[in-house]
Figure 1 (cartoon, rainbow, N blue to C red):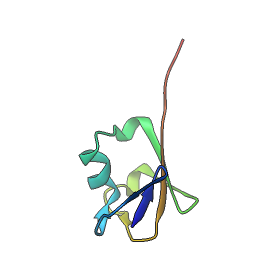
Figure 2 (cartoon, rainbow, N blue to C red):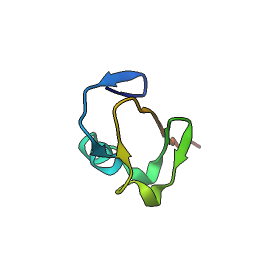
Figure 3 (cartoon, helix red, strand yellow):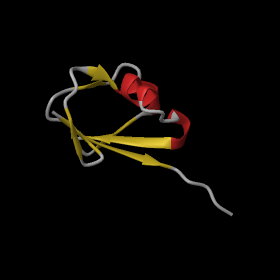
Figure 4 (cartoon, rainbow, N blue to C red):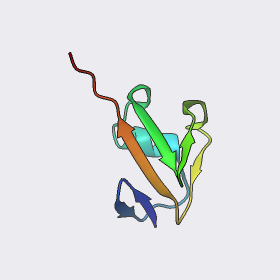
Length: 64
């Protein structure tokens, strides 16, 4: 199980980029933390999620 934004998900080993793309996230507008460490955008494609990981995805919202 991987916990993403508080939700337990049964995912096999998957890259962060695969998960984000498959769930409609725009990598230019988010920040990702895995196990209390920020994941640089340059590593999204090779960063693998594993059972037990705790992931938080935060979207940036502009306003005026």
